[in-house]
Length: 77
Image (cartoon, rainbow, N blue to C red; front, side, top):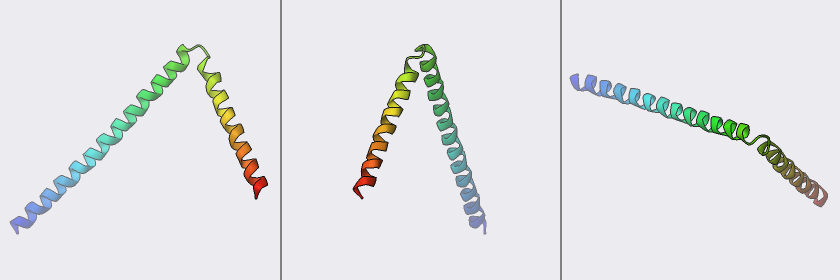
């Protein structure tokens, strides 16, 4: 009976360690995302409006190309 209690206790401990590990990983990912977000915000603020229009133009160009591909696929079928 004692062996069963020890085994159950060890299983509980292992489960608790796994939960802490998952929480730690989640916290690390959240910290990394926050850090990258801050870096992006700083990059946009220090370039005095040069990056924003360039990114916007890149998105518009991509959207126009995808729209063209969509139209070509519609006409082909």
